[in-house]
Amino acid sequence: MRQPAEAVSAPTEPAPLLEVEDLRKSFPRGGGLLGRRGTAVRAVDGVSFTIRAGETLGIVGESGSGKSTTGRLLLRLLEPDSGRLHFDGRDLLAESRSAFRHRRRDLQMIFQDPYASLDPTKTIGTSVGEPLRIFDKLARRERDNRVRELLGLVGLRPDHLSRYPSEMSGGQRQRVAIARALSVAPRLLVADEAVSALDVSTQSDVLNLMRRLQRELDLTYLFISHNLSVVRHMSDRIAVMYLGRIVEIGPADQVHLEPRHPYTRALLSAIPVPDPLVQRTRPRIVLTGDVPDPAHPPQGCNFVTRCPHAAPVCHEVDPVLEPDGGGYAVACHMSGVTRERQR
Ligand SMILES: Nc1ncnc2c1ncn2[C@@H]1O[C@H](COP(=O)(O)OP(=O)(O)OP(=O)(O)O)[C@@H](O)[C@H]1O
Ligand SMILES: [Mg+2]
Picture 1 (tube, protein in one colour):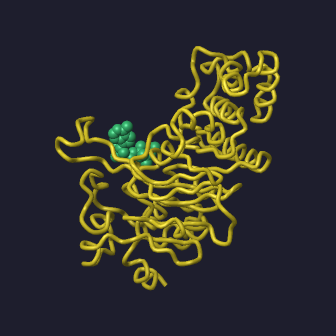
Picture 2: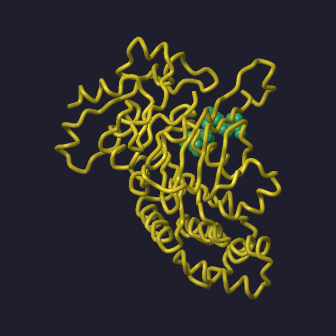
Picture 3: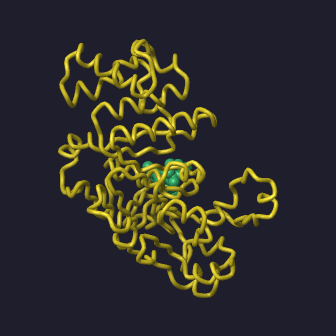
């Protein structure tokens, strides 16, 4: 299924910073040879979206929906099978992987587990200063000065410079990972479950830090999380992924308050509401069945096996991500019908 880029652009905006068009990535099933059994997991299956400078696009979806793979493809930590990636008008996939590596300072990633990006045998000063040594060839003294500035920027003290990751809390480690990502002055940050491993109050500290940094440093974010509340808090627009595809994308409030895809509605209904009266009266949509095997998606709509509104057409025809002309798009045959029913 092709998802036209114009379907998912923010309305009335100049050229976006990042344009992603029909991005695809499959993995061989069970690590075996692709050709042998002919099965492949379609981790990212024709994904298109844009992000404009200064904006946060949130990506939400259940485990295995292709969120991390999408993020990794943007930074070419994985090579896409096909698709187009334009950053600031530049065709990222036209460049060799080694040429891209040098340009990659514009795009940085923050992961769920800072242990994965921070070497436990190196001090914070060395870890945060490493990109400055590699990219900017800064000498030790200059590097340390810059690292102290970066630590201050993310709310850490200068004396943290000589500590090791194991001597810091989870929240502090994530701040270090952010400082390291910022050291090369990127323009786009991909945050993949950046706060998911933290307790709730530390989560909100780190999220607030990220918002402040976005304003101060004019950053653009792709914010990936399975947690719709967190994504809503951070995002200007939200894309909902299911089985490697975007099924709904639009302004965050609209996706949150008036979701059009039954999958988004189910995700939302699982979030507790603080008001007990609202909580009691609000319908809880429980999805039955498991997420289908991405190597063998169902015929018709990917969501048909779990959808409470599935009609005959949904078993036959794969719905296209249909733009409404106002920067909103949904891939559902029944979205109009179910919206009427809700009123
Ligand atoms: N390196 C890989 N080799 C084989 N399959 C992979 C690989 N990476 C991802 N997959 C598969 O691709 C699909 C998408 O995975 P991905 O990690 O992108 O999902 P996700 O939405 O980030 O999930 P989570 O919320 O659990 O992080 C899954 O079915 C996963 O098993
Ligand atoms: Mg993931």
